[in-house]
Amino acid sequence: MKSSISQQEKEEKSMSQRNPFTDALSVLDRAAPHTAIPPWMLQLLKRPSRILVSEFPVRMDDGRIEFFTGIRVRHRNPYSTGAAPYKGGIRYHPAVSIDEVKALALWMTLKCAVMGLPLGGAKGAVVCNPKELSHHELEEITRTYVRALGPNIGPTIDVPAPDVGTNEDVMAWIMDEYSRHHQGETTLSVVTGKPVSLGGSFGRATATARGGQFVLENFIGLAQPKIPQTPRVAIEGFGNAGANFAMFAAKLGWTIVGVSDSSGAVSRAEGLDVPALLAHKRKTDSVVGFPGSQAVSQKELLVLPCDILVPAALEGSITRENAPHIQAKIILELANGPTTPEADEILNQRGVTIIPDILANAGGVTVSYFELVQGNNLDRWHEDKVDQELAYYMRTNTEAWFKILSTRVPEPRLAAYVLALERLVEPMRKRGFE
Ligand code: GLU
Image 1: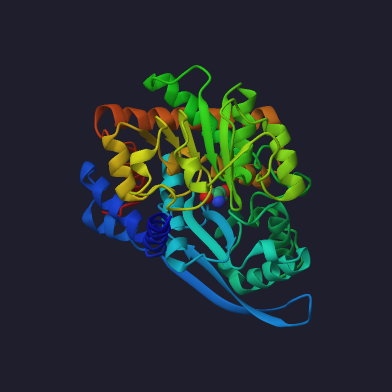
Image 2: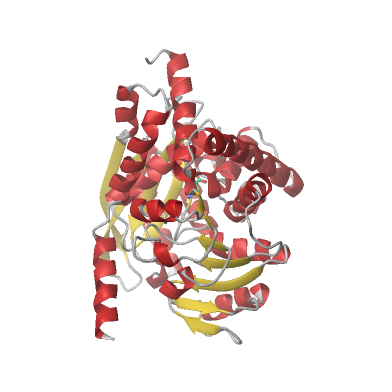
């Protein structure tokens, strides 16, 4: 018992000392030699272009004033701003750091490039715990954050979206507060992931999961991995990405053998009833205690016997400690940065295919892009059109990634970085930046 506690402490300590930004830079450094990127452009991509940090006061429900830290990082925009704004979500989380937001912004630049979207990369955050805040406090924090961002967001400048801890309500408040400060002119395209009734796109709420499904199905078609027709899936995280992925996988008849959330994890070798699990989560706020399931720890969830593991929570959950014990053949990264570089190496050696985040979870920003296109053209796409367009983007770019993976760069994450770097260099060159 004692030794397992100290092992756990050791792992937690090593995680808290991790810096996702330096981890991301180390992958860039390894990918660059596979491309003809000029050294100065690589240096450019290693630096965010702007970091805005503001401390702002908010009156809480009990009348107290509390201070919050708001962050927005712009990474790089290969087109420069104007027609192509910066793009990326806003995270509300108590432990979010500037370096984490820098990593997330860099990944947005790479993700948009992998998908061929005319957008730069950005990310924002407010250090807060949305689970402990009232609806009204969340609204006050959001509106104050928008005022702190001031002219740094806008439809042709930088367009936020949902991320961990934020949702369509937060996007509606952002849109409303921004519009109040712009002559009261309703400016829908300042943000994506809005409610459908307020200019949001059909399919945006489920887009990350749906995009992940398309990538996975295309990968299985191309690589023909040795997994059963109805694979067993374990999912870490039961928020927007994880829960929707569970629904899509269940519809395909796949077996969901385990699911975790921030309170714990449950498993059932014969498969969990996903709609009932969702209802349980809605009612109790957690997957824990789901009738007919077995309680497991969040750590055990990652190493359950399964064919596909879907990390859909936060950075750094797949580590050098658990990578040797992962039983899945395929890892579909619906989270951003869930695998550390050391774990990557171990999994590559073990022949586990990692479908990397900048491809696997790019469905979210892709439908955000569709939302911008619709907003700017006063257009409304029906659900089938969104789904068809998303399928097209995910398929063609999975094929582009797979081509690099199977012919030039046999490491899945590096192959995606190479695809991104080549697509970032090209427009900069064409503009005359040599
Ligand atoms: N937060 C999402 C991501 O990490 C979506 C970003 C967006 O839609 O702009 O990709």
